Each structure stands twice: as C-alpha cells, then as structure tokens.
Amino acid sequence: MNPYILSTLLFGLGLGTTITFASSHWLLAWMGLEMNTLAIIPLMAQHHHPRAVEATTKYFLTQATAAAMLLFASTTNAWLTGQWDIQQMTHPLPSTILILALSLKIGLAPVHSWLPEVLQGFDLTTGLILSTWQKLAPFALLLQMQPAGATLLVILGLASTLIGGWGGLNQTQLRKILAYSSIAHLGWMILILQFSPTLALLALLTYIAMTSSTFLTFKLNNSTNINSLATSWAKSPALTCLTPLILLSLGGLPPLTGFMPKWLILQELTKQELPCTATLAALTALLSLYFYLRLSYAMTLTMAPNNLIGITPWRTHHSQLTLPLAFFTMLTLLLLPLTPSALALLSP
Image (cartoon, rainbow, N blue to C red; front, side, top):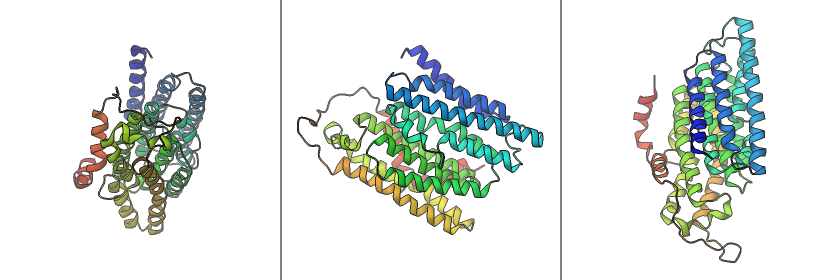
C-alpha cells in the first residue's frame, strides 16, 4: 500500500477514536465510531485475497448494524428524556439497546460470532489492530455511560467468559484462539465495569499489552496454526522460551501481569456480595487456561516433523522490529509487583 494512503488511513483511525473519547454528545460519538470503521476497512481488504474481502464485508455489515442500533437508541433516548448527553442515560430501554450495540461492536457474547470468523480472514498485523485499538472507542463509551443495567452487564460478562473459554478449546487456528481469548477477557472487563470502572480500565490496559505481545510473537515466527508453532525453536530459541510465560500471563497465572486484573476483579466481586458470580468467573478462566497450555505445549515441548512437507526452517533474518515485542513482553511478564502504583495512577 502507498505510504501516503497508509498514513492517511492510520490518521483517520486515530482521529475517529479520539473524537469518540472526547465526545459527550451521542451524535459526535457515533461520528467518531463511523470514521474509525471506514478508516480500517481499506487496511483490512488491502491484500485482495478472497478470504480477506469476505472478512472485511462481514466486519463492515456487523459494524454498520451496531452503529445503526446506537443511533436509534440515542435518538430514542433524546425523544424520551430530551437528553443527547452520554452520561444522562436514565431510561432503561435506550440504555439496554446501547449496551447491546456496543457489545456487538467489540464482540461480546452472545453477539460474538462474527469476531473469530473475521479475525481468521486477516493477517496478524490487522488482527492486532482489530483486537486492541478497535476496542478502545466502544469501551470508552461504556465507561462514560456508567450503565445502570447491572443484571444485563453481569449476564453479558459471564456469557463472554464462558463462551470465550469454551469456544477456544476446539480450535487449531491461532487467530481464532486469540479471538476467543479476546471475548473472554472482555467478559471480565464488562463484569466489573459497573462496580469499579478503574479496575475495568486496568484490565483493558493489561489485556492490550498481553495481546500485543502474543500477536507480535506469532508474527515474528510467521505462525498461523498450532502445527506451525513446533518450528519456532529453529527460528528464535530465546523467544520460544519466553512465549509460554506470555501465554500463561494471558491465562492469569501468578506471578505474571495477567494475574493482577483477575485477582482484583474477583476481590471486588466478593466485596459486592457476588460470590457465585466470582466463582463462575474463576472457573471459566480454567477453560481459557487449558488452550493457553495447549499452545505452550505445542510450541516448546514438540519438535517439528522433518519430512518434505514440513521441513524445519533455517534461522533467517527477519525485517520485523523487535523493540515493540520486547516492550510488550516486559509489560506482560513483570507488572504484578507494581499493582499498587497502577491502581493509584488509574484511580480518579
């Protein structure tokens, strides 16, 4: 792609998200989301592969549906209450429709089924943008709304953690596994959103760091399915040693960064007298942990078959920048001791 066009699209992507961040009026927020969607679509379809075009079409239709629902709900809210302000969502009907529209935007269960299919059609770089940057604007709107539908959010959160764990068990494609991982992590964030927005934001930031390091690792190894992970030893032995730690951090094991949001969320749910919800969330985390362990096993404890079909590749030089990978890997592995500092920084 022409670098001028690429920089224009990336600028549009950033501008759309920034407009949504800065808006207090529903029409302005909707405009930012639309700019965001229209800027990423050429990035998605740039390879002209039939699968990429199909995934782009699915993504566009899903986002257009969610945007139409959002516009309808905000107009209904203005009609019922006379308010266009994002923080003045007092009527239950438009609030519920808006929560569902934003859930469709980010891919929460039970409106999640587009995300694994769409992510599977893209390369790992576009998949990384879709899994991290594209979650920011809808999540900012959910944080601003401070939605009153407590039961709905808990149901969406539990369904997402369960389906995110369950759906990834049977997958062999890495992008689909990461899509289900994304659904499960977003479930944790939505679960705690109404009780502690600070914790939801902390969970989002740690999720972005962990997912970025995982995507960049797979991109460096040029791996798209579980079988191709077995050749990682020949390409980058040091990274192959670190990758299981990154995956276990995604699974939420101590003493890694991924344990921090899960631990704090379970603690907060218990404080809010929701022990059953906390127990269910902790149990669903075991489902996700299983497929992270499966990836770790495939990457570090199996050797690639050295036949004509799958010859172990030579350790060739790669053109990818390793500084972002090193930075995100450090964040993924070492932030747990800084939990009090992180909470102090994020608390209002």
